[in-house]
Image (cartoon, rainbow, N blue to C red; front, side):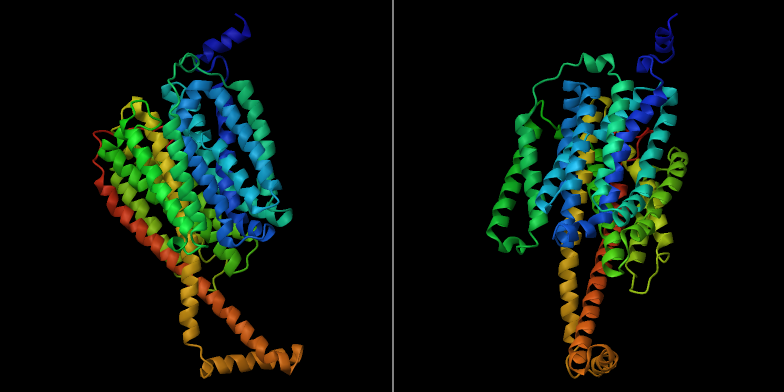
Length: 527
């Protein structure tokens, strides 16, 4: 028997290709996509400085990617059946890789945001496509082992991302945090082209017409949401006429999309699946979870760099243990998932996340790199008790025929929630810092004895360096800078505490789930 025929007999599901080679091929693009989010969060202050943007504007680098990613997710199933999974995956990796180059080469914030939108569109389908290919490449008895290996790659990326991003940013430039995707993307393209083949049911799939109206309405309302969230703070929200018009377009687009998706028999998204109580509850919780996660992903590195003056590499090292916590928690949740009511695991995970957020809310200007090591580690551990049980419970009563539709909507809401969370946190940091600065300033009048004492001591010190004439104004300038730092610190404390309240709310809301009749495996595309 020829070697090719013998391999085809041995590995019938992959047409003769060793399924572990398929695993490596599909892990690379997903690893690249997850890594990119973690890398970008650490480089935000450097991106802001290089592109003459504020920290609030720099967070648009994250939110623009998330929204573009969310728009593509519901359409990925149709594109995969229309063009073939292999071809569509290759197209997505090529788009993601090329967009990564333009992100790194961006001369202005506008070019950067445009490139991130394109990158998000390319990266939106990478995880669900990779998981679908992987699940169909192994026989049922070996799928859990394959998904464990795949999940290991997903968990390792958040560990390496902040540290690698910080090292690249400090050693070379923040631009290399995006350029790093280019060699990984080229290798992924080669492996996908060489080892992945479409099964007959994909090659012979008959697809209906694309839902242009549904997709257009989805772009309208998500695009308006993104613009309002990103630019509303600059123009005082509803105080600006354009914000009111954008919100009107958002509402009309959202209502139109819901109506079209509910009434159209072959819409891009079938919203009738929301009649399912468990799935409806899961969608609500995944949106709130997205808010919680991306708030911490975005503002914790900012806190270390902007308030404490850490370098990007040091900030990456400090927040990196979150991924280690997830790495430790993943096998434990795999063991407990079939033995304990998932609602208990979910509640414990949200409570753990909330407690850690409360600990983050105790920060001050004297903390060191190791002060928050344990809560950051526990945060990752707690999140491992949320992701898989939440996906499992949400789809436990969804039919197999609706699984693709369900996972697309589920992941879309996670990204939308994340984008809203980042925008809310950025706005809160600006407004709460201004409020706290006003409150502190009200107690620091010229007759304040403590202010006079501190100012006099600083002026005496500065007089030896800048002269007596400049010493007094210089001392007041230093004290004002200290007040600004304290005000910003108090704003971060507020945001962390609000995040804790949101997590505790989710811990109670998980009991809206109906307990499934039997435990089921997590669905593809549910990460």
